[in-house]
Amino acid sequence: DVDKWAKDAGVSPERIVGYWIEKKGQEAPIDTPPRPDEKVILSFHGGIYVLGSAHPDDMTSKSRHLLLKHTQSVSRILSVEYRVSRRDGDKFVNPFPAALIDAVAAYNYLVNTVGFAPENVIFMGDSAGGNLALTLTRYLRDRREAGDKDIPDVPAALFLLSPWGEIAVKASGPDSSAIANRDVDFLDVLRDDFVACAKMFLGPSPFLESSSNPYLSPTSETSQANFKGFPRTYISAGGGETLVDQIRVLK
Image 1: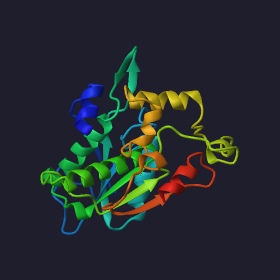
Image 2 (image 1 turned 90 degrees about the vertical axis):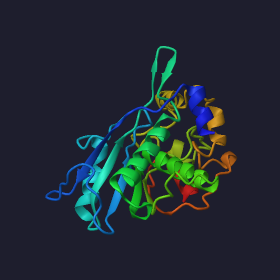
Image 3 (image 1 turned 135 degrees about the vertical axis):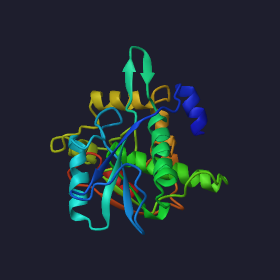
Image 4 (image 1 turned 45 degrees about the vertical axis):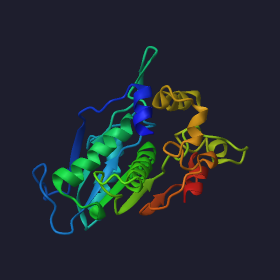
């Protein structure tokens, strides 16, 4: 399926950038093998799949720095500069599944080049990055179930901060979080510009059909997503968020 989606969208693998974020005083050369039982975080930033950066100075990286500061078992995080989506006239650039392809490459690098065992890797993502962490895990599980021995196993855990669970956000009524929290959350998921960003990410894929695809919308009832074989997962969200309804479904 991913191969077909990539061909339909005109997406192919490209070389991307990743940033190592490390504890102060514990910097290590790139590709340094893990210490015995060392845990590592593979991080995906948020930004509606069209904004944000993995750069350590980006606003979305603050949570990564704080996590390292207050976590004893993790001394470094690999933050992935996956391709964000945009439009160039009538052409979609880096639509789905470009970010997923980049995430697979990053995990493959972490396991097969650096040498981390899957049981010592944690996927971390906020907002769209949380969606990507779930999508990558689903891809790994599905490929392993299909008998692909060349793909690494799922990671030890997921750490999701306000994950985006359904691309085509629905408002079920005035009490739904998408409407009730519009005035308190900086992210208004019903505004035209948010919808336009989602459509850029989907590219040629029909917007409304995204709800039936578990790789895109795992919290949608029509996607019938199952989480068998997924690792233990920590999900954090605030009650004033516009996405909190779908996050509660995910939990």
